[in-house]
Image (tube, rainbow, N blue to C red; front, side, top):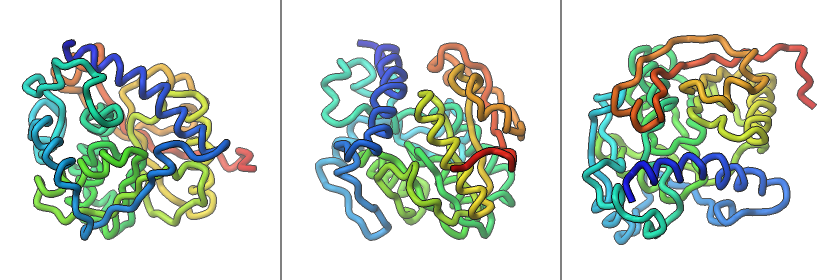
Length: 271
């Protein structure tokens, strides 16, 4: 099966599987929630997982908006670009795609280091970790990456190594609807793919802003689920980037990606 099949399954999974994981937070722990862990610079990768990821991904810094950052991704030269997706032994590798919203956020941070310099940054739904890496490169004082997939956490450590960085802390759990952390900046890309998840993000981000005056930046290429959600009326467009041709082809013709600043109205009910 060509990677287009992978891409289709990943896009569907992003709307269904991950959304179900988030929703399970209300009714009880999901598999990923039960396996939550915390990775830090002293955490060693399981040798067999490291070997598998290194064998089945390609190190690349081309075809996306941030050539300064090297990443392990699924590319046409990887075995699993052609293999049947069900042969992949772990959860769907959302982290192995450098999604357009994350590309825009990372490019913006690299071009505007003042946005993160000396500040604490939470990268929500970090995936491959590119935006967290961009924040470290740009002088953030503290970075925490968050994803619900333990394999994503391991991939982030490999990506830190590729960029000659000490791994930043990585939390592998669903933190949406948890107590609002005291972060100077929260960044999230490509997270608005399910209405209920979007509603939860909207509420939780609003709480972080109200309690801690947190700044929030959102990256998205203009997917329907994002543009049609009520949060869109409370966003300020910061910058728009034209996507590289390869990224356009892999995302069904999306041509650009935008960084938005989330500025909710004080009149919104946060209860």
